[in-house]
Image (cartoon, rainbow, N blue to C red; front, top):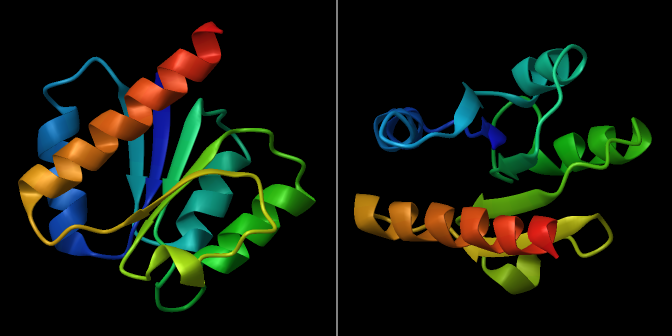
Length: 122
């Protein structure tokens, strides 16, 4: 599976690199919506996991770009916002509150990947 992660938190990006290095998932980790939009011009992904609260451009702007570009890749949101604050008018497969520790993040990524694999195989 090829996954695009968009998150401005350096700590989360480091944790993701460490965890993904132990998996078979091809991945690209970006720190901004600007970087992610550039990458989406030349690469396709099976899954996009995006934070919502980021400086410069928010995850909402990323969702708007994905919708406008007619990218059909499933999207999962992992953010500090409570789920009720998440946008509900985009093609978001899953919404998760960002955990504050590594094991919580690892569990959420595993849930997202497993859920996506189930959907893909049905």
